[in-house]
Image 1: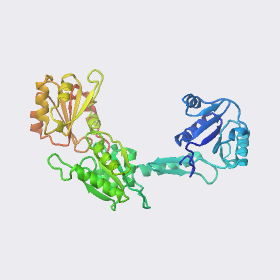
Image 2 (image 1 turned 135 degrees about the horizontal axis):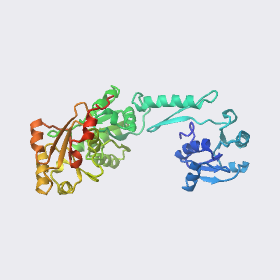
Image 3 (image 1 turned 90 degrees about the horizontal axis):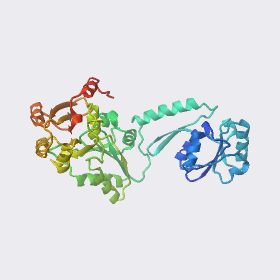
Image 4 (image 1 turned 180 degrees about the vertical axis):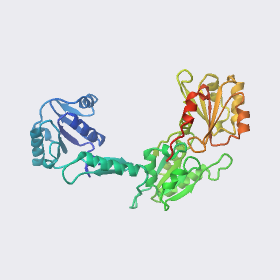
Length: 408
């Protein structure tokens, strides 16, 4: 219901008179709302023709006539002829059908708002005086930037059904959370947070939002998964918006699937907001491309909890990049299994600790010596281990490391 204020055009006929660039730009807005768009115009832009070819809209290649308004819920008059637009607007007014007159907004009965979307909310800006499209777009963009930066409290003010939003927080740098992830935090009544990758993001959350820390460390799991599931369901069933904030991506070795299943089983609506997974972003920020032409065309992501599984060993011996999450404690076993399975002892290994944060540190070695080096340098979790030819300390890594990452 966001193409215009309060109008629900989904599955409803919208007539567009004209097929040029002005019309095609607005047509995309109507299609995004699920409207059934019918274009009448002797000629149409490439965009309109492509949309018609794909079946996204219908197009009659002729001049518009009054009968074309039959069955229309909304009309856009956007031909290149102002007199035709005015006539279409008059036909619409006679039929009590709302119409935008692209030639002269004062002759139509509606104006299209400049809209930005933020989760379940849409913010529209419209001029009450002489139309000034560049002005209203500038205002819309300024408001949208504040909302997307988490500067506006988006919490519901009326009681309603609770829900859970499962948000991937990214690898640690607060700038790497998605826009939708920030929006979700601004909607939260309760935030259930992990230990890693979320600390700086919580600074902007209002003080009266309830924070529940269920984070784990390698040797300490104070809140079992079943209890986490219960917390999510219980708060949502009490009518709250619960944000489950998880480091990285919730579906990449993050037990996000278990939490979604628990919510759905209890009848709690749940939204999943994917995150930037540390498996790819942490090596990338450190200058290590997990795939690169001539070095590796595939990547395997595994958990250190799985130990030296056969799939990882086979990947090491065939030139596939292996990325190990939560693998510091298991590093000796993984390396030993790889070497025993036939992996080249000279295969490069990189360990990135606290990736994308101010404490990031990269340790390089090979399968032959990485265990010794990691012990001597005191490598500690959280860390991402990369095994493969891409992990060598090359020019790309040194150039990126010389340029500190931007911080918020």
